Image (cartoon, rainbow, N blue to C red; front, side, top):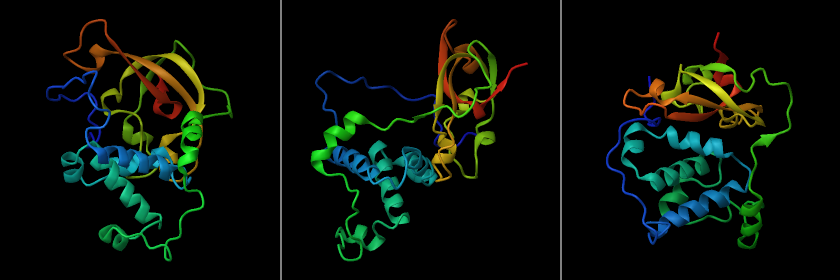
Length: 225
């Protein structure tokens, strides 16, 4: 079954295009939520994959009713509490208890933000083995549930590409495996490939000749015999 957070390829309503002079953030608090997310990530207490998992496992009613940055904020609150950085009383009262919860020594300071953003956080890792698939090979994706390391789990394999046949276009080297990294089970780097699928194989209403390219870790794929 398609998880409620996995909506890629689903029919949607009208799309409102951005205009050149539109503000980057619709509301000022959106900017603050993004800042909190980036700053808290600098503590190294969780990964970007953990954050994604926390958002996609919000209760269904909340996930479907919250706006984009509301999902970010609620998931971040839940993560802060579960990791012991704040407690519910502090969140409810809006007061930070410096005695019970001293400031983390890895807190990102304002003067360190430009260099941190310029450096980024790469997910590529040194190759630890030989890839088993090759460019030009025909492959088939697994079901997303077959790529999970635990239940409920996190995967970057979209439902619309599950069980489909494609061709490997690129090999990107070894990258951190989100399926394990989201759950503090280690980075477990795997070969990462770009796989091209015919749009007509994915959607009935696709334009002939169109294609979709999906980045897939090796454990998402099987050779198509």
